[in-house]
Image (cartoon, rainbow, N blue to C red):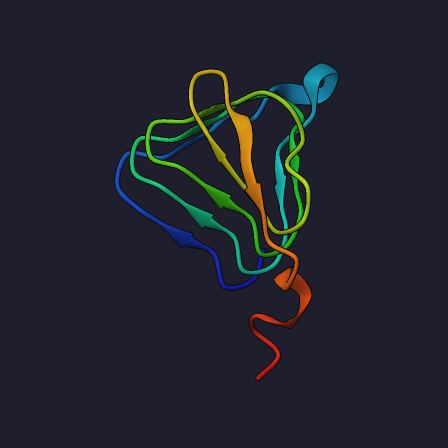
Length: 84
């Protein structure tokens, strides 16, 4: 996890050996109150909205929102955002 921006009251749940742990990519922004549950992988440059409940993988450059989280937007420039 590199350059993660996390706001207050974010939950990253570790599920133990059976369920595994969440893995966040590089430069991921996690909104206040978001919950990331189970063995979820988030691609780099993803954004997780405030109070979202993430139970599925998040693609690179995606913005997810809602309960349970769904893809709202995928950035086409995700791999070049932080290269400058």
